[in-house]
Length: 80
Image (cartoon, rainbow, N blue to C red; front, side, top):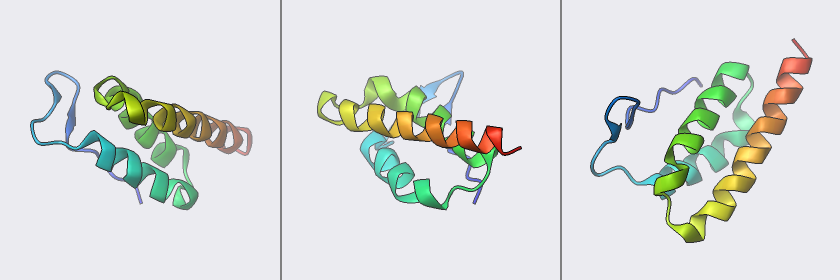
């Protein structure tokens, strides 16, 4: 399930036409399916990167999801 998020380019920022809210919803939908540290780290990186461009009304939900991803990452790391 590893997914590279092509809309995130560290050197150029978020590509035009990217919908940060859609990315938030996709990560929320996929959270329970994530089974590896790499999957969780990729999703966490994406949300942390997109957080600032999210509409303020979505930032609380994004922060909650980021916390859930960090918790899941800690559990996966402890099990390694």
